[in-house]
Each structure stands twice: as structure tokens, then as C-alpha cells.
Image 1: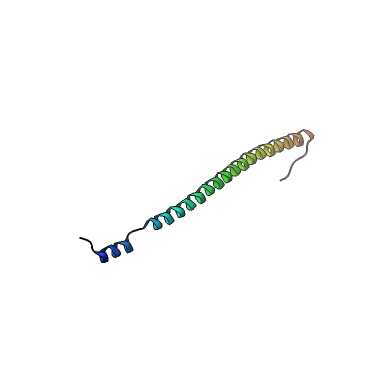
Image 2: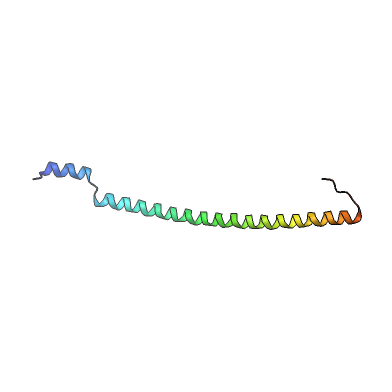
Length: 82
């Protein structure tokens, strides 16, 4: 059977309701921070995807303009130097 000394030793080792409550509060705060981080990463991914799409469009436009300039130079007899 347990005596008072055994109970005191167990209380030092085992978590109390207050310990568990503090742990839960800490976990809730961590969960909120992770959620905010996920939202931030989602926004960053969207921004990178948008920039990638815009870069592809600009590249296509520059290529098209380069082709047109070469055609114009050829028609008027100018040699383009790069």
C-alpha cells in the first residue's frame, strides 16, 4: 500500500492537471503559429507561380519581337550585330 511519502514522490514525477493545461495552451499557441506559417507559405507559392507565369509571357513576347526585328532587318537589308 502507498504511504504519504510514496504519494509525494509520485506527484513530483507525474504531470498534474495544471501541467497538462500549460502544455495544452502551449500546443494551441504552436498550432496557431503553424497555421499562420502555412497561410504565409501558400501566399508565397502563389506569388512565385504568378511571377513564373508572367516571366514566361514576357519571354515569349521578347522572342516574338526579336523575330520581328530580324524579319524587318532582312527586308530592308540591314545586318544586325549582337
